[in-house]
Length: 354
Image (tube, rainbow, N blue to C red; front, side, top):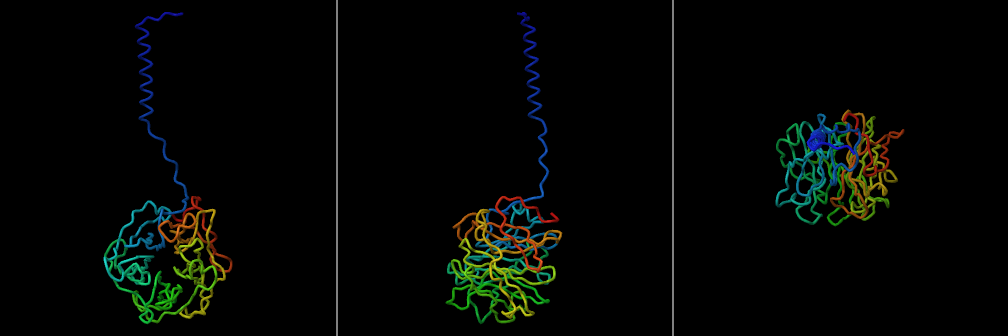
């Protein structure tokens, strides 16, 4: 055995301790590795909650909103796939009392003749029969700024009954209003009606009935046609996509009408598809997919559908419904092909231009 002088032993021990300390210090203070490069994908849902989603694109920005119950808020973004990173801005609060004070549903934003209009459903009490459709106006270029002015109720005075989910449809330079409503004060079937508009908050013609829930797939839970939205193909052909059956059922789905005549006020000029065009995906966590809207990718090259769905069965018509989006395609005959709802967590390529 080799004998080491105690002084030398102390120096050797000090040396090793110093090296160890410097090594640890270097590791703790070192620059962390760079984050992985961003991928060109996203997954659904876009938000944890968001019933009745709506989006519109203007000046390379998307303005998104959904049902909040007592107010209207807007999310502004240039990347719909990153909606979860955006902070919403409340632009209107329901009054404490009055005809539009309760159950604020399904707001939509439309840019018409240089002004913004927000169409929304609300009522005067917990009685859902009081639900009607109302309009707000904003002259600002950006709907998250400026002042929203109440333009009152939009309705047919001769048929002022339950009316929800109003949307604006522009056809041959004329604006039409389409909504879901009841035939009378004692009727509970939700049908689709249309009327020509004289301005953005007034109907020029009486309402015309264009769709009733007649097939079995339109009557799960209750006979319902609601959430009408217009989709046009590259050639200008017009499709009306709507939600069918009770929103509280797992079989809430999308149906389709095709405009086959020149006058959209004539019921026979709309042809209904015999079967739903978008239905639940049980294995993918998409129950009751519906109440949709459409938008173009940032570069205008792609068409996308935005809709809500429940992540599991039996969750009713509540805030469990989350917004999801996916690209749609077009069949050879010019009709839209929505496929099936993409499963939760699936990597989806972001809209082109993002």
